[in-house]
Image (cartoon, rainbow, N blue to C red; front, side):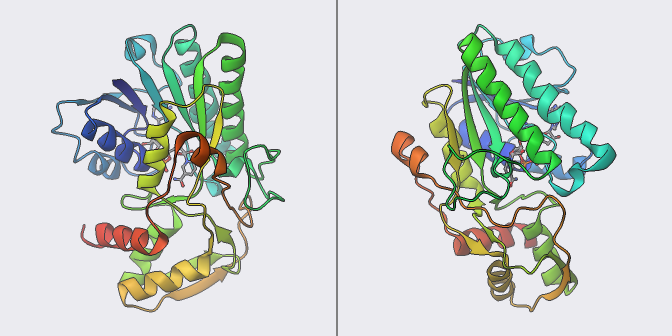
Length: 309
Ligand SMILES: NC(=O)c1ccc[n+]([C@@H]2O[C@H](COP(=O)([O-])OP(=O)(O)OC[C@H]3O[C@@H](n4cnc5c(N)ncnc54)[C@H](O)[C@@H]3O)[C@@H](O)[C@H]2O)c1
């Protein structure tokens, strides 16, 4: 298959591109290297792909570039390009979230209109906000509590709009907090691992008792692969199906790294949800999704990759 992966130089997009190439697909990676984190880090994410002849990278901005030539003959587009991060989504930076999350997705949907190309959209558990149902099934009313979450939800709903009106072959996957090797530098585990190993203080927002459904990046990749055969118009949670409090993750990191964390507690950050918990019944039943990597093994892999750099 000819696949397009948007956000290919990012954390999850680079893992997905590697897995697709490994399975024999050809991949056109698209990224505009936003400055949310360094270009150098994104280029390093692509290091295993650079010498793959089935992988090609195109540097362009989905919110403004001509997209038709890029999508010609594509069987499947995995749309992961976005401006991520809950805490940075307030104030003047919101315009980046509108541009990279909403406008870019709408332009992609327009460009795919009337084709049979599948679009697998990377949505987020942040669209649920503080859900009353735990674990949270897909039919729960979305009520995001951050500007980031509203842009991810708007883009997801645009996917449905194009499915409903034009029969676009769209599937949306709601990822629950993703971790593993190459996790973004602004995300908690990456920061914790660097700080604990260097004996620096770690900053924990809230009391650390917030529960999260942390999902290993390879399980997210497998959810994407399965979505190639999913019924268009469907939304799926992709999570570990297991929750753990943040404090427990810190204790596990201490034991893997062999050093005690120096914890500085801060107020709960605006826009952070209290708990997340994925109900993965739908994706398990429809597509046979089974998360394979538990938190202990996943953390060991992330620590090993990060500290061997
Ligand atoms: N990491 C998580 O825990 C998580 C959880 C839920 C959902 N998601 C979603 O998964 C996707 C990937 O997240 P990630 O953590 O790998 O982020 P990332 O920032 O590492 O990757 C996103 C990539 O998209 C690129 N990009 C942004 N705007 C673009 C544009 N207009 N044109 C072209 N490229 C553009 C960036 O340069 C970046 O390399 C995002 O859609 C995010 O919202 C991530």
